[in-house]
Image 1 (cartoon, rainbow, N blue to C red):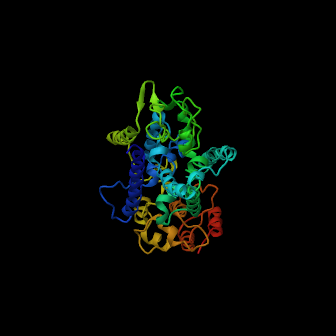
Image 2 (tube, rainbow, N blue to C red):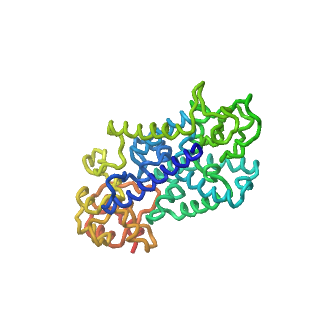
Image 3 (cartoon, one colour):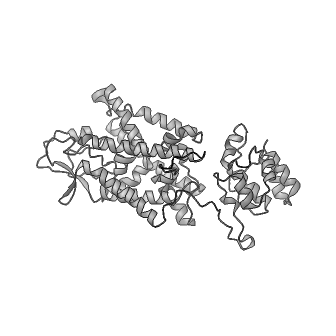
Length: 423
């Protein structure tokens, strides 16, 4: 039963996240189950809190798609890591769980050769991968103010592949990782995961650490063979590697035959395998409930967009805050745009369609018509300045015709529209 404790815990969190992801999809169709949360994956993803850190400090705002709940989840996972190390990776993360499940098949296929195909030298070289990905992600996110990692995120693909909103790259990466899991245990965690690096830092000073009693150790090296992260435990007094996922598979109650030789401890206190799930649930769900009691837990943004702070346009809603979840009917009401003008401009069949539905409506178009197109259209419609950024913004020809014929545009705006007119 002791060895199955972690398996049951991993299964619980995998099913929970899967149900939340499915229920979020159902909620957008108005048929969500009331007893299951409807939060998006972004609202409960701990890496989102890391990605948005620069934007939050620089502007006080979160990246698009993220919510206050994202920061709370990130904070709670960090607290758990400060106490027990990367327990999130070893006990909670669904992507890590799936890799382990597939690894069980690989272990049966390759037996003792499983997880030993990569030489120690190559393993050490590949271990720099997460650092590179983390730096690139933080740089791209800071410079674009977008979730730059989203298009390559296998975690998002794992629970959203059925929605049609997942980038092809992330699906390809997910498939490659799952295939690699047949020969390498947790390949994503070892060689690619940027969140693992952030949490791994806590292994250097966490409160409870896996320690080895040298006086009772018989150097059988079973702990080394059992470690999913290929760590050498048999010659260490304590496991402080940033790669340790605190799975406790090496401890005396799971692998080590010598009692109390490998234990998770702090001072004279130690934690048994069976108590780890209780502690994780206590800190994670207890923290969430506490944040709810202070009205800090928010998995959705307010329906009301931000207002422009410039004195020339005070009290007007900012078109830049239009979100994909808005319906065109809401945009008509909030931004004082005639419904018939929206229907004509974007060739809508229903004013209740959401902005993000444009991706499907214009999926066959050679140009990208999406949320930013609507933002730019509304700004021009209301004669509000709009920062297009470095990205080109395209509008359907019907929208361009309406703006040119009904609005007083300056020559620069007219030239831009004509150069960025779609079908």
